[in-house]
Length: 195
Image (cartoon, rainbow, N blue to C red; front, side, top):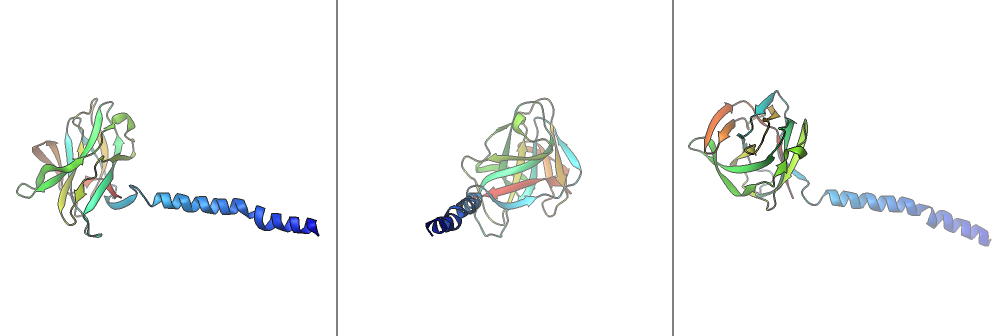
């Protein structure tokens, strides 16, 4: 009889422990995935033909901060899609306010410059994520410009995937404060993340 009880104890208590452990760990992983900089706020991700951003040039695309949710939005990270990258230098991404008089980028918003990323760490033909040491805040429904800053790029420019998504369809290039229109029918592929 004691052997039977011992067998039942093993079946009912010992054997289920790995299952319970896996279940617990799965829930822990899910919990970690829902905290930190992991919430996609908005994106422009319709793939179209490639465009080329020359080294030393800023390329800007106009966006409107989403009104759903209502905000304000604390931006902890953004991603860009690059097809190829220069051979050296570093990349930063800036968020500018909007100059409605000229329909161009105005000034960098508070905390609007990302941490720099070496070109060696930029993903070719894929998404590259950059973070902000202090998250900038975007006001819902307000126009901004997201700018790929290749001012320190060496060995040529970067080729990125653009898209014809609407209404974010104005792309400009140049060196601030001088901008020239690249196209009114395409925009950089990007993703904005919030905490």
